[in-house]
Amino acid sequence: MRLASLQQRNGLILHDVDSLSDVSTSHQLNPTLFEEKYWRRQGLIVGEAPGRGSSLFLQASDHEQWVLRPYRRGGLVAKLSHKRYLWLGRERTRAFRELRLTAMLYEQGLPVPRPVACCVTRFGLTYKAALITVRIPGAQALASLLSGNEADEALLRRVGVMIKRFHQAGLDHVDLNARNILIDPNGEPWLIDLDRCRLRPAGTWQKRNLKRLARSLEKLQAGSAIHVIKTGYNQKT
Image (tube, rainbow, N blue to C red):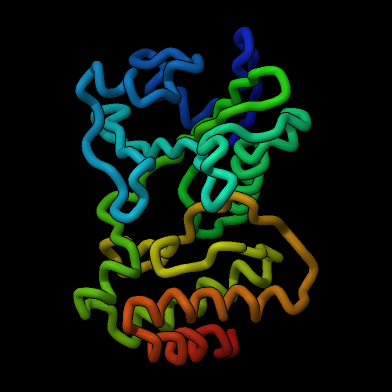
């Protein structure tokens, strides 16, 4: 993986040269690549992520799909602006930080989607941003499998093992929930959406991650699943 950056007017792009090499002949690397209307005009939007209305699935090439996720604010701040953030420098933007973190974990062999590129568009003291990653073929959210009673104990234990791997790598996932855990057709779990996440020394944050996941499972009326997940988390490797 080779990360490179470029600037076009007020657009700052950080991208993986290798990820873009196969599709560069079809799509030029510029800020329009990160806009929904660009893909809609070409009829290349093939779906959107359940429960994440702003994330779109794109047919980037004959053999690869991407996920386009614009950054959106939540809570009370969203009433002022749902997609603008305070500019503090490009390396402190949420998009640059998430892409670099995802790339680092991907290079370590951890199950995260391969990052493709991100774009930050600056407007004076504010900016908006979007991120593109490679879509994991055939993956479903753990939340969907739990709702359909399709998640057995073996799968839940594998989820626990996966979370432990990330914790050992120092990843504090601030929004660990059943929708941010994907399961591929082979039954292997993946972790997505690393916005605002960071690497930290071991501490109480690991327990907070698991408690947040437990609350997510309770909302799905699958609260007992956390005990099986913790079994996998606590098993000796």
